[in-house]
Image 1: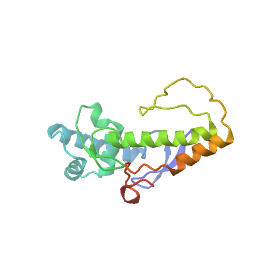
Image 2: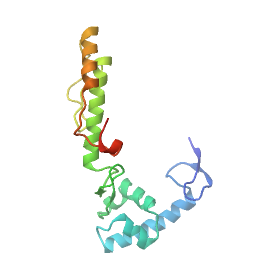
Image 3: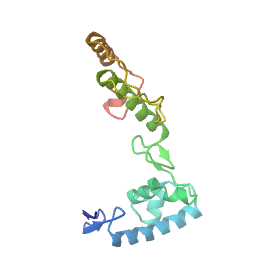
Image 4: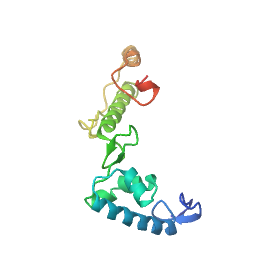
Length: 169
């Protein structure tokens, strides 16, 4: 079903059926994209900041195009910052280091919740399940509290984050 949205570029209301902007702004963005593609073809490997400056297009618009894979589908190389750490990447929204860190955090959170709920399956960093699902045997309350205490007191100081002066608390 159609939704009424406000266009982020021109702030007008429109019926959203595809895309992030209204049809008028979409055609403007297409012209901008064509200009950027022409520049990147003539000078491959340019950072998004340079493409933005030379084509007079906002960096956010170019980064949206790059994250959607528009440049990659055309075999063009454009570098832009990772959304979490700012490292220059050329595909996706986050770099491989941040992806691995997020995967470790998810696995850590799942392991903290698994003794409590007892129905999570273990997951590899690639996001695939290690084995088929089978509900684990019930734990008695003393083992459960000891496991939760061990998890809550353990701190891994080697992991880094942009928050809290680089240390996860």
